[in-house]
Image (cartoon, rainbow, N blue to C red; front, top):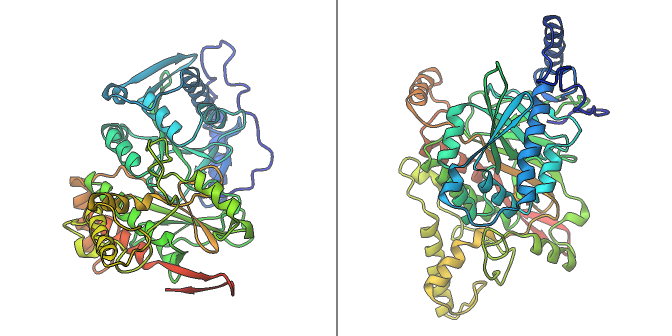
Length: 487
């Protein structure tokens, strides 16, 4: 969402009460006035938009305490920088810091600090963004979630409240989540950067997570979508052109449109298969593919200068150059598999319930094809000779070799010939348990013959991958004529 905010209000004034024993408790009259004020705003903006959390906002005291607590928690890793080595105990660590009027607990702090470092993010810049004097923004959407969403003033990080079950699910699976991102540094999965709990006397404790915003920087984004690959309740009325709020649209709004990429399309299809296979193993569903796009400036086009290519190659997170992957860099940074029937991952529709697709098998098949081509004198992009195992691993990791745009938060960004796409998978906490199974059968009765979100994890995975395949296409550029032609 975007919202014209005008001037920002500094948030740290008036946080403490006269006694210094915690935040001031507003009177019933003030609470009523605030509820009416924000109720009116929500009605005015149809529950959509970003709102500055100024001193009159109902969440002002809470967000000030969150800032104070995060500033102190991050300062410990600023003073003692994390190492790249994490132990099993690090995943179980819980640090508690007591402040005036509240207590903040940080879970697996060393693990997340190491991960932030691997993303090229310094602890100081993380602290400055989360704890600046400028107000947080409250994010109000048409989501059914009961969570509260806050956005840092620079719109770089999201803070979202979660229930205890969701936090436990994340922490229980944190090790395999981090291993997945180590193996696939370009993963589309949302990047979780911290897990915390804030306890305020006489109030219910709140768990919250910090995550990287998929839509950053958002200054030039012209459309945003939340995609689930189904049709029931998947339409949002677009905002009027002169409206200050831009709605997050849904699947049906994207009808007759395409994600237009060049060689990156093959990488995107493969990474979707990899990430959704991981989520299928976690037995989760109802996650969303966030998608946004903006036109590229002329100097951002993929066919830029050689100097631009070198800069982007240096910024590419490859199995060799990423802090997550120590070791020699590949010979061709930025390479992705060519698009086409032989290179594309197999259709997920053929394995919707059995999930027989594995990236290693696909890579091994491609490696054998390259090996046969080399033996017959065909040569090719893979180079001549080499052992089968080496070729297989090169192909297995090929999806990680792509050029990244030269700005902050490039991992969720894919550049096509004319558009820059922001892509990420979010909301990965919904487990397919008894409640969701019953919901599935109820929706089958209510929506016969229609597709809805509550289906088994293998079916959900297959459907979302099929949606990306059907709504993306490769655009060939011809430098001499500056024209393009779809496959």
